[in-house]
Image (cartoon, rainbow, N blue to C red; front, side, top):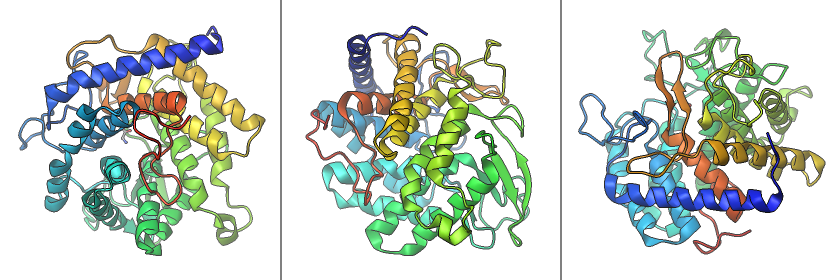
Length: 417
Ligand code: GLY
């Protein structure tokens, strides 16, 4: 890929952000308090359809990205239309929590992370209360004997052989909600559960070459690892690109909550930040020229396989977070440059044309093996694309930093550089 001069790259990113905000401004009145499906269909988002629920209902694992884009857009632009749009989703998330609608899974951080953001931005304690409830629901998924958070399915349903005791790499992204709750409440059990899950994920899901497995089943009583598998990757021994991206970003966000991991788990326990670097190196070594990864990194990258733009968008944010966490110096700079190269590829070649209902980023993949959302925009890809642009254009920082205060301290529309 041609490396363009810094000033041209900066303009590309600014223009991409403006286009994204314009597109979101079209969505706000179009969808109102309803939610689109996880992915576009034939290039267009439509109101969510889930059996047994009204159209546009708040179910599934991705609705937080929609609301999260509203808050991000508000932080970037200071425009009330975005704030009101994001705020208008509050009753839906509150009622979902009160009724425990479709919350038997680990994605509580993705769903209620925007509540943490909203609390930081507005100071409205109802958002804080909601996020704390979400952390409690997530913590209830912790299986003490196995030392892990079960990804999917009802806890304690021993007949469910598919999901009982199963962990997935994606969960690393939901652990910051537990650390946030620990900081907010002083209850160390949240942080202990997150640290235990992190340690087991490092041991079971990340391979010595820096690639990752999607999933591992663990015996509920003994805690023994039973088998490695995948749902969305090419195979149990392959490296699903989005899982790898979740891993890089999740480890970068979590590592500072795991000091002493080495002391507790022995001198050879892996350091989360070092593992994140290894995972980043593995992904970066398998990028096609335009910097946008294929849906599974184990596939020959010269083979013209389907890309997953959403994996790339997540990886960009992960690499930028990694660069920010590393000590100042060449190593961090290397990951930042790599992130900019990947973001350039997305902004130059994958940004969706404007239009009603269109996503932000073309050519994402939800699940290739299930032929689901292949070569479409998807909500998480759009969210992390916007976050990546916010990071490089406006110095946006994660909601999960420090004590997890949420929101950026700068004035909306004038985020710190
Ligand atoms: N966390 C689910 C996915 O990435 O598809």
